[in-house]
Amino acid sequence: MKRSEKRKSKRKGLRKIFLVTTLVAVMGIIYWVYQYNSGKSLASESVIKDDKTIFEPFEGADPQFGEINVLLLGSDARGDEDARSDSLMIAHYDQTTNDVKLVSIMRDTYVDIPDHGKQKINSAFAFGGPELVRKTIKQNFDIDVQYYAIVDFTGFSKIVDVIAPEGIEVDIPYAMSHGIGMTLQSGNQFLNGDQLLGYVRFRHDIQSDFGRVERQQEALSKLKEQAVSIHNLMNLPKLLGVVESYVNTNVDNRTLLTIGKGLLIGKSKKIETLRIPVANSYVDERVNVGAVLSIDFEKNKQSLQQFLSSENNIGSVELDEIRPLEKRL
Image 1 (cartoon, rainbow, N blue to C red):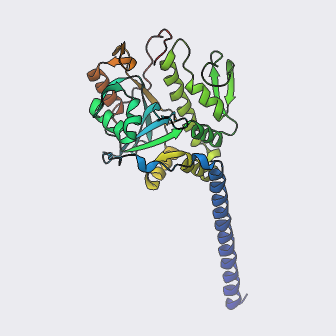
Image 2: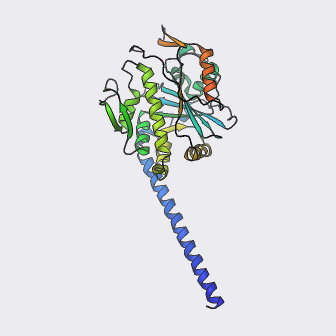
């Protein structure tokens, strides 16, 4: 074959490669846009967030030593009522190790809320949004939080259904129905978004709110495992569309991608968990705001800071003794 013919053949080959690459890229973009819009379409107009400006500016400290704390707030807003935080957690991400830790603060924990005096910690959200919750955590536990993410009941259910279309596997120890708008039978089963929401909200058993917190941590751990699975790589644009519609957050895209990449390549599958107050560090009391947990702040502050330390690897902290069922107001 002549040299000129070889050059023509090579150019044709390069053109084919270019065309195929371009076609794949275009198809990828179309798929991404379609899936993203599909996720967005799952949100009705009534839930699109238009209230972000009502919150004070969130003045979280800059991340230190590659460690990020995200305030996770589950909102119980219903209609025109003021929303309180139905659940309050701190998700801790270490960019060096790609490890994730999860702290749940009991909503009846009796704390000093800046400018509002002694209150249950879940009232801070109603008084001043995520910024006041951040200030409250800093003042009482000396922990800096950089970001926040707020999701309501509907958003949680939709996100679960996108992450796990076939459901999240849960072993329910006994039938649950009171206060959750459905009946969940006992046994090992796969729960859809609405059912998992009922599971994590249920608290009318012998463990009361303590069991509820344990179920919330269990659910988030399983959701994290599903979210970083190979199956959900193709589902990522749809998930982003749903999250953007239902989650009110100040986490920027760059940080979100950093965390997502770290979770995908990280070796640690298990989320370490802690509950505040820790065992043997609180007493039940009834005060003017209702039934509360009066805690030993020094003991809990020390436990929390030790748990979040990058040098710590103690795993999950067990819940303490089973407590009698009581109604908290």
